[in-house]
Amino acid sequence: MAMQTPAAPAHPHETMDAMAPSGADALDSEQQARELEYRSLMRKWWFAAPVGVFTMIMSYPWLIPVLRDWFPRGSPELWYVWAFMGVASAAVLLYSGNQFFTGAWQALKHRSANMHTLIALGTGVAWVYSTIILLFPQVLPSSEMLEVYYDVTVVVTALVVLGLAMELKAKGRTSDAIKKLIGLQPKTARVVRGGMELDIPVEEVLVGDLVVVRPGEKIPVDGEIAEGSSAVDESMVTGESLPVEKKVGDEVIGATINKTGAFKFRATRVGKDTALASIIRMVQDAQGSKVPIQRIVDVVSGYFTPTVAILAILGFMAWYTYGPEPRIVFALIVAVTTLIIACPCALGMATPMSLTTGVGLGALNGILIRDGTALQTAQKLQSVILDKTGTITHGKPVLTDVVMSPGVDENEMLRLAGGVEKSSEHPLAAAIVEGAAARGLALPDAEIFNAIPGRRSARSRRWGSRSS
Image (cartoon, rainbow, N blue to C red; front, side):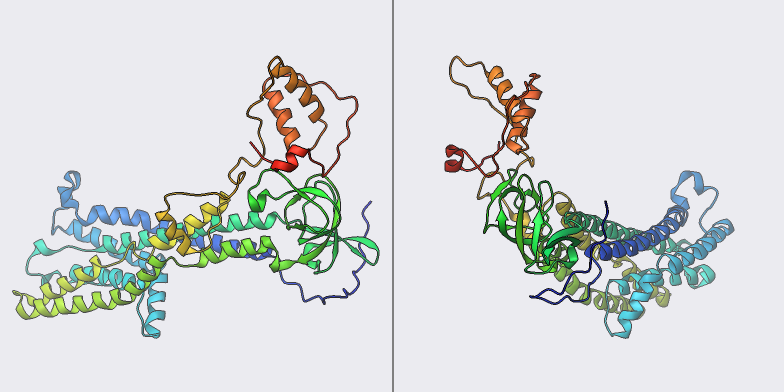
């Protein structure tokens, strides 16, 4: 029967602060915002992609046998096609590429330059130049020089937008991993206050609270056992597949699973101070960190953009001073070409995408990466040395071999052992039962069974629990 929990009395050791939104709620809001931005970028990509394919084909129709006779160079038909391309590419710049021009304007207001500056400059100049020579082809010395660069405008915009969308998708995988980590923590805790056991939200547990944990439940926060004993599955933190025996005075970790006995523990770390919260924070910090090579890219980008602009101006001046007639046309083509070929399609995308993808996929597979520097350094690893057994496992013990004395039937002994162990909830017992079932053995029922939690054999105490 459901019973309404009375308001908890004021705690003698600590006052309650205003409760902040839970990490899962914050991640949900962040994920929704990221999903909206991702859909927006993909809409921009799907708008720009077909225009890009069309402009790439029709910018040089004389290279394609089927189109060569329909749209010869200098023909009115080709001029109308290019005029349509000019309008379509302008729509791509305004819709799909508006964030690059906005970013370039923001950087200009701060008297700086970034990747957006060069992308906006390259695509914008290509469109302006193509439109001018399309409207005033007489400025060119020969009709053979009449070429438009609308394909550059559209294709560069489409590729960079796609790269941004892929980066957001990679970050989403990291957020999914963080949500799974947050989901490991139970929603409620059973605490003893005023002589009563109360079920309260885990966010309201205070340092010093006495928390009750029953068999099969998750431990809500970090603490120290005050009463009772049990075996706790700590594989979420340590990778150890076998439960760890816990007694009075031993520490327990939030989000780990109590397997057998019941106990009470005193909360020592709650909220953002728990081990699980530290792990989540580490993954989030790693996602937002920068690898050393990315910092180099950022520094290079700060110099790259003004350098390209200066080279374009120098090229214009050199051709205008020493070039053949019409000098102004050749000088303008050189300047525009310099800006176009320097447009960074990949420089600003490769390292962030690599970082977010690496951290996200690692977290989904149980590998927590501290920061970007650790990820970049990992490429130099040649050996991995583990300091204890059981760290790399399937997450549970498995029966691999049965070694018997001479004259003892292996299957019969395993059948009898499985009959005893099938009444036990211990992971080693489950491994024996599964091993017997895999061999097709029919297990008998034990007439009398008594499990004694927290007790091990002399050999087990000597060598410790080991998993296969």
